[in-house]
Image (cartoon, rainbow, N blue to C red; front, side):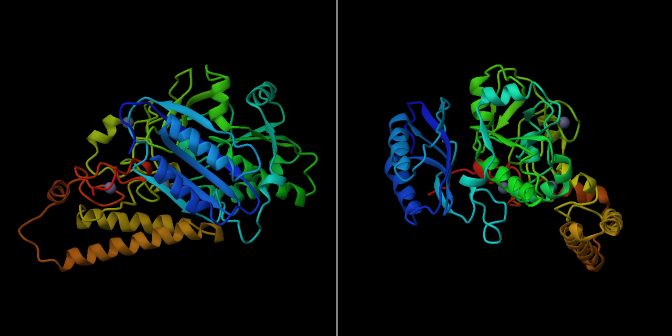
Length: 405
Ligand SMILES: [Zn+2]
Ligand SMILES: [Zn+2]
Ligand SMILES: [Zn+2]
């Protein structure tokens, strides 16, 4: 697919536009095939978003062709890749309702072009950060991205996916009112919508004038180009392709291994939350010494030791302890906003009880102890459930290998 001798170009881009042509997806697929590209492109009635890789000439043709379908100038964030590897297994164009999954389209569609916050250039954004008083700087990415790098003093809304942004706004709008709010994300696309949503809520509260909302134009990507030493950004910029991150100049590692708390900031497709499958930072040493490879993200860290995906490696005694602690956790989750968590716990509790029943019915061959059960089951991939030696996490998202033909 990619010319293995030449370096390739990777472009990150998006464009919001009112009612895109229905033929956009088909045009994209054709372009991808004709130009021998790899990447991920989302198309919706509200616009386009993609990360695309190809040789320099092909990318130039691609950019010109895409620009023709949009009236505003697309900001192409290009980087040269010298690794000679395809950052995606193929070229996939997906038609979606929303470019960024807020779960709002339909109920209250936002006019992103008209409602989004004021764009600041990296330099303008940087100088506003010099006076942090009365400022609320918010990272609108997910926690697993924030954890490997973020701006000094930025708030992490604690999201595992973007659909949680409305909840954050609801819970924090009183604190935000009357302040200067600054949002940033990887390349700018999430801020466009997150800021539009926040501004609509502020307007409903009559606080839109007293609460200016700014967004970093071009995201961390453009900021790090303008401030190669990192500026006020610490750590690495997580990107959604096989590279997984782009380093800033200052080279500091701000991530922490969720197991040993040592410095670590490299995500890996085989190290995910056993509950929600979000990426979790786990260092190589901890991962190598883990028998089962089950980890917990910050949101599910209270389920550590109680909630496991694979139950067949546990003894009766261990399963009974799990059932007990799951029940205790379940009793603590009260209120309508905890409904999803209760469902997750209930489902697991049922699985544990089923497994216990199964063990009790099974004829016992000799005296099988807990230790025997543990060593007899090798580690498996959390996502596809294959033995880990066959799938060391390469089924996860952009780590997915090219399907054998
Ligand atoms: Zn560790
Ligand atoms: Zn999780
Ligand atoms: Zn797998």
